[in-house]
Length: 480
Image (tube, rainbow, N blue to C red; front, top):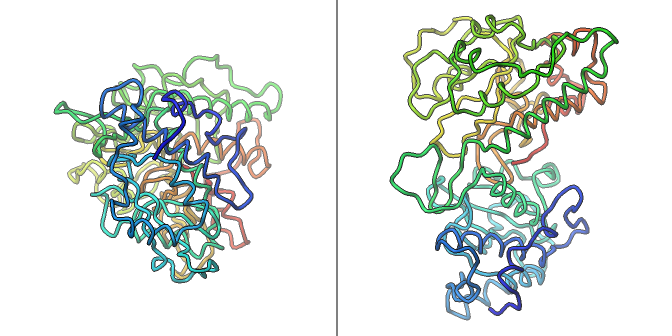
């Protein structure tokens, strides 16, 4: 394959990245030139990281073993089943070395209509579904990868066959399918943020999950800044709607000092400590229905149930950020998330012990795949979909479109199992929660009074209303 480009042109992809100002193509076709540029950037980036170079060697990239192998008949057999635009994409790209990105191995181009038997194929003599990039080895059995629909020209990322149920029928799961350039742009965004890092592993201890060349970090510094910005923007929106003279007399000092968090046994060197010692103190009492801003530092420390339990090195326990006045009995749902996350069952609490409800930070093991230290869990004092039949299609849903598990106390606003840009079961990001809450204030679903956001914590139960679409107010659109 020959390309008339320079190394600098390969790396200069600013105008190809998908953003609000530069949206993906929406005319139902593949933007193969844009996708090829994004693909080649990732190939070059990985090559430079592996070989310790500042610029890619285009001759070396062009000499990589082509994924079809050397047999011409193999190339033709697959290409004849691909639409012209996807073949044009192949003509413009470099073949990546193994470990193309954190979750994917390399080009696959596997035809897989058998995984989508319920979907009709209106393409003449061509498979409808193609796995462009195969899932990285070791991430689970029955792997798939980045799946491309040649009929609708949309892509999604079912890591395994089990994820397919979150994608079909496509007419009911359109929000899980994206232009291919959107997926590639998200991956590049993760690299630039610092969540995904390229570099060969060494023997030193690490607080990251490594898959070959690529590492997933539990959080990065830029996420501290963006989460603070989301919370402070939300606080400003609430304060702007409060009656004149009702704001609490706090300055722009941070919500907590390091000394406050030491008293609450919040670990050093973690996302949530960095956030709480930098975000401005909200000038109201209630940050969400029934959830109090922790203006009383002593009470905040006393409410922490999980920061004092033993947990292994590399673990960060759940921190109760905004508490309600209600408790819930410790149960298997809570134990699985807040205790088993640290592989520790010997805690001084038994099932039935009262646990404060409210918004918690996500407990994590940093060396596990897809940890989300910037995540959260909203622990409710009541179960959602408790009396729903498992076959009912009514009630609260997660980002992947799945109904919340009947009887769950912790799944509201969460991703669910499936992530269309890569990963499984990762917690939703706190930044995204406050962006959603901002929408609820601005659209009038939540109201503001002299103490801040009005209502009791039971208001979150509106996610379970029988009225069509009620769940969408308490749902976060899929993202990485």
